[in-house]
Every structure is written in structure tokens, then in C-alpha cells.
Length: 83
Image (tube, rainbow, N blue to C red; front, side):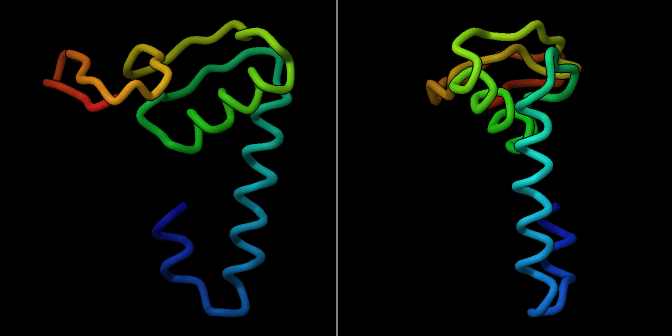
């Protein structure tokens, strides 16, 4: 997404940004989540879903375990990841 916005013309940036907001909103409405928590977009959608639904929906992370952005280090097979 970030690369797409960098390449976009000035007139397209607003449209591209709104597309990201729509994507996050649609992801938040889902009944379950399968994705990657190393993605900021995925984490935002997951947290938005929690705030809208009031509970953590079923999920599977394809890379790291979920954390509530406590700014701590977690150990993953490929090293350490700042969560």
C-alpha cells in the first residue's frame, strides 16, 4: 500500500487513501481473520473489529502471534520482532 501511494499522482492519492480505509473497514466487518500480524493494516483492521464487536473474533495469524502493541520483543522463527 505504501509503495502504491508513493507512485500515485497527487490527484490519485486521496482516492488511494480512501481505498485503504475501505479495505480496513471491510476486513473489520468479517466474522474471522486469517492474515499476518506483521502488517499494520491487518492489525488496525483486527483492532477495529474488536472495538466494533466487543470481542475477539476467531483468527489465525500466518506469521507472528497477536499482541496488543505493548512495544515488546517477541521471538519468532526468523529472529525477534518488535510488537
